[in-house]
Image (cartoon, rainbow, N blue to C red):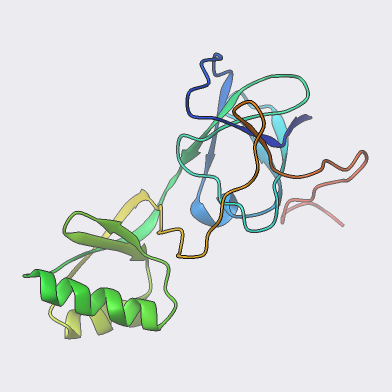
Length: 169
């Protein structure tokens, strides 16, 4: 199994050997076992609180480079007739600690019928879609130390087994 624990800098020009397509909830896990686009199993180790973003590059002890890809997932696209209404919607979502992706003139959230009703009550147009979800990192999301353009995200246990939800006990 391939091990990935080091995030490469954006200027790294090494060839990409595979992609790892994950929805947002999987990209914010600190321990994960997943399948690469090549069919190979990979173990991902990151520091708690790290979020892997679309386009991030990761590597491990063997030097193979893997690109993170945000998978399409069920979301709502929120558009409003004016900037004030969009700000009101963003305020009410934030007041409910709802993760939101901010775009030029729109918000994107995970599907939630209760939030959809609330937003429509605020005069927003809410459309169901399947799209990559990249919510705002938050005001206190900090970076990690780095060395030569590489970011070691977490110490890698020598013999830790990573379980998938469907694995037998």
